[in-house]
Image (cartoon, rainbow, N blue to C red; front, side, top):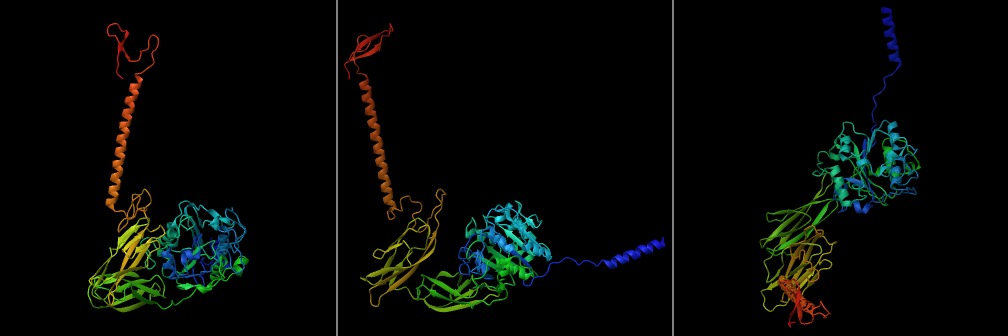
Length: 582
């Protein structure tokens, strides 16, 4: 028994020595990043999303992201440097993960027999997951992972009808997030079928949450997940397909901030080669092998120095009359935060605002601009503003107005001159397109079109012919909002707008009393016409009855003219009764 036990122990020992212990599987660290997150957007050109590289007013969230990112204004969605990508959308997506458009077009079915980045990652011990929102209605066209033989049935693909951004954030928030994470939104969210503005809002909610910001992402958002916390080297890529130039953005601690590339050589193959180089993976086809890997986006960059200045709409403001102050800021990283100290104990914020000084003296006004770079830059501008007393010539305007498009804005500018017999000349600047101002009467009239929403500042000037001349300059602000849709019960009002007046576009200057007189006259006319019609009908009916009593006589039973037919009460027989009435 002891002999058998000893032999067994020796055999186990020999086997243990003969079979080396397997190492624990682990993902190789990347050269510049360990994890990458890609959100695939659709069908917009570069300028609509990113302007010249610093942002667009149509996409305020993406603009704020650009201040901490790198971008490429000459990124070619259909291929660069002699390389060609056709059949997009589908061809653009397949090129991004396989190094070739594979000769396919929209609506292709599984499966393409070609290696992919996912295959190379799996061989290298790297992990990946791909998510397609709400059942992936566009299928392979916008989600290439289901289009390749080697990966189409992978458990790393999530494309059920319940897939949402919350599922994707959960994956990013896991203890060991995948090295590669991909998300395809539906066409209702990716700017394919919705506007730039709504797509920008979607990305804002997805990345930082409806109540969060880049500086403080809200819980449950992508940038608040474990993947983007300190200790993780994660690069975010926002990618759009199909345009030339197409938008693209790289965000992460390894990426240069406010960097705008001047290269004209980048395309989908370049993005793929960037990933391959990072993890030392082989290239897959001739497209990615020939493409530059875009390594210039890595590193640190120093934004241009921040400078700021401001101007007043009046060089010498008047006491108790508002004056507009406007800041001009360059350099640094937009968007900028502008704050003011007016030197009279009050402060304000905003790039352009109005302020009223209440004392006749000099004020030191200081404007401070802060940019969005990390660390932030700040710059200040200071001016001494001399406020004058109210002069002999006073220009009077109504208050600022708010009106809806399609509604008239009417008001009259008036002046008061303490110098008798003076001739006052009125003028205006910054008059909106379509607006009219009569300097002889001071009458202003404007009906903003549907394309003229926004805030307008109009400057009115009065000057008399005294020696030296007296003058008065005043600003007036007009906020134009889009008119409420028909039947909504809304409508622009406020200011001099005529609200929902049906004929105001034709007769803008008719007063309320004139309208009442006109309507009263119409009602009187309609009433008289109705009475005449009723009387005419009564007379016609009376005549018809008289004519019916006149008939042609017959031989026996018909009454003769001048008679009516009546019943005899006691015998039930008819008898004639003479009548001479007509």
